[in-house]
Image (tube, rainbow, N blue to C red):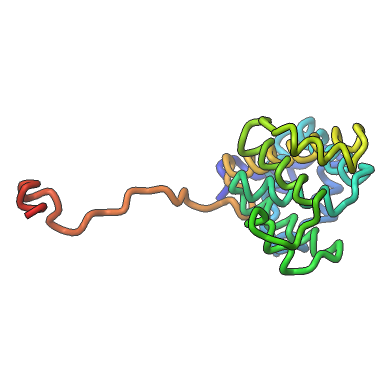
Length: 203
């Protein structure tokens, strides 16, 4: 279950919140197979809901090649360990006609020969944004500048960071496919471990 309360349909008073609820949610979740609880949790604050929806609209209206944009979003989900963002944008890559083997290779792009020079630069740039906190090597940026305008690079930066934010929030609030236990837990030792002297253990 999400960590925050989900707003029932009968409590939704904002017209935009109501519109998206009625358009996207059924009794079985969303058309993509997700539970749909992002929409019901973010309905808690219509101001934030509206801001997020404007962000979704912005990236769809961007001038960047949509495949490049989705590579950044998909890799951001993978790098931030958000199963929700990664899964949703794998689906978007397929919808854009990207081959299945290439979609799968986003997770290990560094050793894949399926990506062109600009695609590799976008993936490397995404890793710099998400994994290295914005530390991007000049050589990576130089490839972006050979292929993209300043405006396109700014849009790519904004959209990729926007989806790092969504990935982070989904994990923190346990929304959608990120509603799962933390995998980093102690693995119990075998029965009897620690009851004998360490020298006996090493003998």
